[in-house]
Structure formats: C-alpha cells, structure tokens
Image 1 (cartoon, rainbow, N blue to C red):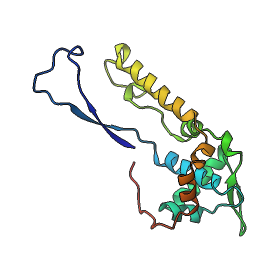
Image 2 (image 1 turned 30 degrees about the vertical axis):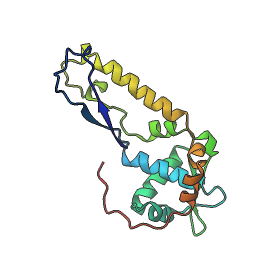
Image 3 (image 1 turned 90 degrees about the horizontal axis):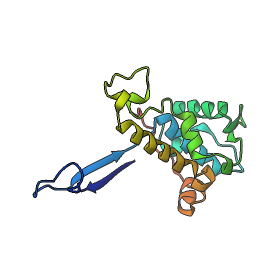
Length: 183
C-alpha cells in the first residue's frame, strides 16, 4: 500500500526552517511479500465461500496470478493449519477453522519469511556501526509492533463482513494470469 502525506517541519524540531521551506512530500510504503499477500487472498476467498470447496485454478483465475503460486500458498496454509485440502476429482480446499478464529496479524507473522524491517534488527547480518547506540531502532521496533497489533484486531471474518467487499469476492471474474511478480 502506498500513501502520500504532506509533512511540515516545525521550527522547534531540528532548528529553524528556512522561510521559503516547502512541506516535504513523503511516500510511506509497507510491503508484505507475495506469499503473504496471496495467503490473505486465498483465506478471504475461501471465507467468502463457506459451503463449497475452492479450487486453486479458480483462485488463480479470479486474482490473475499463477496457479503454481496458488498451489504453493495453499500447501503452506494447509501446513499452518488454516485450510484443509482434499485431493482428487471432487477435491479442493476449505478453511480448517472458523474465519473469526483466523487473525490477520497471525497470518502475517506466520507467512512472512523475514520480519526484519531494517538491517539492524538482524544481528547476524547487521553491519551498521550505530546499531549498539541507535535511537531510531527503538522507534522502528515500536512502530512495527503497532503495525502487527493493528492487524491482530482483525480476523478474516472481519474482512469478508464488509458488504461491498464480500459481494466483490463472490463475483470475481477470471483475470489474465500474470507472468511474474516482483516483490
């Protein structure tokens, strides 16, 4: 998600601003990996269809993503206990538990391969000489905890309960499948 915001620097922070200083335009971007993005899509897709088995081909077509990626995500979600799969001609997948019991924050924590937002959060790869005394690290850690705490307040059921979104989920038309996705 990309958001733009105007930020003005008050004179009492960091010294005085030049009289002709203009507000800085900042772009905030928080990006989840493709696996997490697709995992959330698969879960809301299944939650919107509680009385039917979902097919990986249908999910791939509905979201315009590779069936191979969807199969990989479904397999991962099955191993994490979020969905149940059935093989064969009448196979498919369904949610393994109630959508009210699947917290968005939990899914993000369990599907993100690395929860390192800056280099210094990983002591094994950190090369920053300021890490041991950095004041920014604490603020970033607090912001990251707030991000996850916000996601923890929502369940997959909350996502599907939004009337406009639920009806859109149920009427997704097949999309052309993307060849690749860079993240």
